[in-house]
Length: 149
Length: 139
Image 1 (cartoon, rainbow over the protein chains, first blue to last red):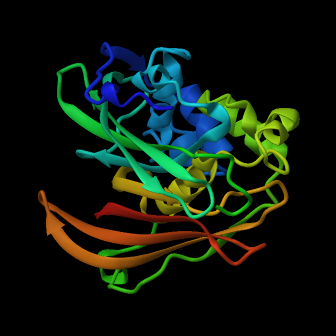
Image 2 (image 1 turned 90 degrees about the vertical axis):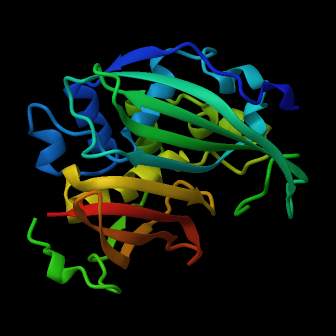
């Protein structure tokens, strides 16, 4: 079960360098051939690239990893990115920090009681300017859902 | 890029694009690129032990395909917001179709902007794998 006392939990800020090779690899995995991503020496990040921050620090360090969610029952409900201006480019060091924003439950149609966990990650450039925010909704289902749920 | 402000009237749509069939290799390639190594997307035994018929795609893979579909249309520099809700899961062999439609055009923060309604459809079921929204600046 998700530990609801973890709302408001915030991790330590950390810094991720935006790297050209990772952006190129990510864009290709997303089946984009846009030269802006694969040929530019300092490409902007694709719209969903900042998801890689979850894994920059390795497993077990994000607040989400401290909630004891069962991977077999974990679904990703939704994801949002807001950019306060053009998306950041390769060569930028982004400092990020994640907090557990909300935990709530809903009754599912097929999967039993579902627990929703929303986390928000803020990304700042070296001048401290907020350049992007990511909101992620994770769902722990009551049981493994069947196809299509 | 070629798409202008005058082109982006409410109701204007991006050219529909199809992707797939998605393979386990596509899933693994995305997992390597993103760093998300949840075994449920590549370990058949793990997925079956969790009650699934097989491994299934990473939601963020189809979200990433949709995001790049949008930037391919309106420009990599111009994304200001991108949001998705995951609906049907995507399975090995599935074909996906991406569509984007202008729902609103306005000026904000000194920029011309459009809000888009987005959908990724699974060709196998006709249902939505993703419903989403995006905001782009238009030069």
